[in-house]
Image 1 (cartoon, each protein chain N blue to C red):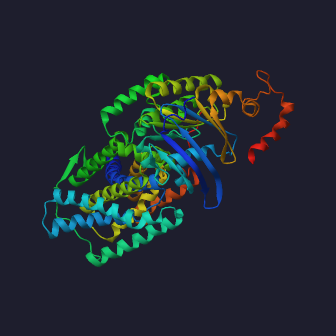
Image 2: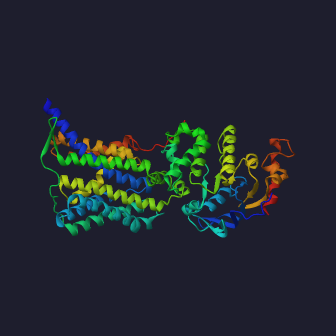
Length: 298
Length: 272
């Protein structure tokens, strides 16, 4: 009996870790959607790119992890800016569908580029964190899991503060609400778009590095870009808070579904469960848990 | 009333505005605003009042509109080719029609966002206190989402938000729309107070002519994309046409019956 509970708790804890990483990626995704109304299909590739850049530095150049991590963040920031400037800015004013097509092309392009440069084999990060499992209330937790959870939480909190108190954060929220209103306030919306892409690339790369540390790096990381869809649809596409909650729910749900149903159905449930949920949400609550139904005054 | 003996801070000179390359909305519109004054533009729907404001603030460019002829000058500098964000930085802030508060941000966040061009944090803090002094009704609403406050409070919020950028010229587009007479008179009192104390010049677009003429010093009457009448408020209030068409009076003090409204054909003579 207690074994069952421990098993469940174990699944929940691992799901929480996974969910917190999803949250980072979803945050980046929602950020772009909110401020520019573009669904970014290259989110997973941004994540993968970050992971590889960090990997190259630690493994090939033997830079201490913490430094390569920071350099990766700067690199991603610039990458985000460049992508916006080179590919998205010229599409300003075009229909949303064309812009989305551009992001799809971008995702294929980046994935191929990564394959050309680094091949398709799984690369393993040198152990940064202790591999010793920690036993906590009878649960098994890897140190790397604890770190990723803490780290993801810190990032999410930092972004919360950024959006609440910084001038740029407020400007981004105004732009997300209405671009014309933003312009009447003297907000340069093109700069906001660039910033949204840059920040989005940064958070995704953090997610990529964390996942790379847990599972190793390979092409499959790009699938994370698709995994954010159930997360953000569940949370509500235009809600940053919703994206975080949705991600954690999906992370836990996917783990539980995998843990209990895999033995019965013979595997693969973990990958499918989020998308099954996606379909269900779209049927019963298409705007998600926290999505905008438009505030109405009474 | 001395409107010509000093050079205006804003002058719109014979501008032509075209939307989407084909629709001619303003056909030779001119106006001037002197420092520290309240100037009003009257006119019925579709006359081009809002377009004039948008042309000045540069917002026009976001709607596929363009000033194709004439010039707009602010403190002697041409602004008709500048982008909205640059014009805001020069000191012109447009409060758009329809109380466009950011609904999913709190009242205080809305105000802070209004101070986007103000980089000094201390000034922001001071300005926000100033706004709460002008609009005490906003104080208990500070932490509430702007989408949930009343229409009057939202109107106060958008005017306050505009003031956070310390504008030299405020463009107000129908601040009275959809508000109760009591609230309207309160808001107009505050606008007058801001104009007096902060020396903020105001260009006011209003449907409520009586109200607008009560606080302005100079008025323009627009029709079909051009000015058909322009004078000091004192003279406008005595003008027979203004009285009839905008104040609803035929003789002074006599309210018109609805039955007589068919008279409005007389307006045609302005269209030449």
